Image (tube, rainbow, N blue to C red; front, side, top):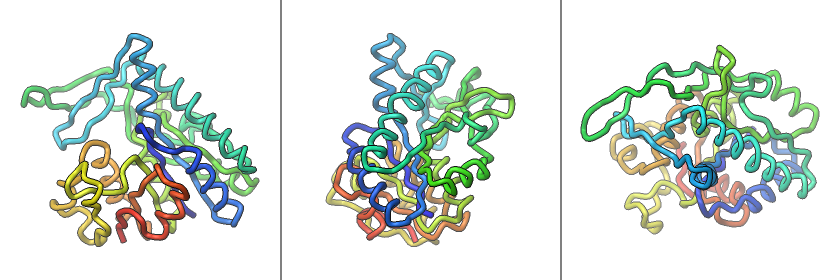
Length: 269
């Protein structure tokens, strides 16, 4: 099993990702494809007059402030346009892909956060009323049913809370959890950079390898900028959970998954 998380930043070549995933699938590789959609969500939110807002948490991670209207936009972009376009690209490549969110069949289930801590002007504050949460359970029986029937699952947030509410959740953490549940051979994070950079945004400063025992070392965590911090945290979770290797790699190139599996990018093992 290979779990691939393709991000939603600008510059990602979804056509190349779909073509590569389809080729691997036809060769008999079992895949789960997880995707984001952040850049398009931001553009749609701006167009609808509800511009995105982000919170910086005490640990340095950044997350989207998700009120009810933002959640509606999130559902439109992630579950609608982004998911179905990716499914369409895979269908064009002859793969019977099936798109579903974490809400469908309670695929991704977790607890809605009652309060979120964030930092503003050097002070720790608390925001209430967010529709966010962390996935704690995966409906593996549903995924196994689809895989056994020959469908390639294309998975996207949001998740579903235990109370039955859609909640925004982190796709990188979702991918790590799926990789752990399936004890995947590899977890691949594809984004608009070639991997973890020692001197961001200098792409020539790519860190080629991180030993498993050092993945949580301050010198590596300190290199993670912006969304990469979430991916590094996902790598930590996956490695702790028994996933054999994690690769941060480039989604702007041809054969991005195959290149990642060949070691192009930052490899954690």
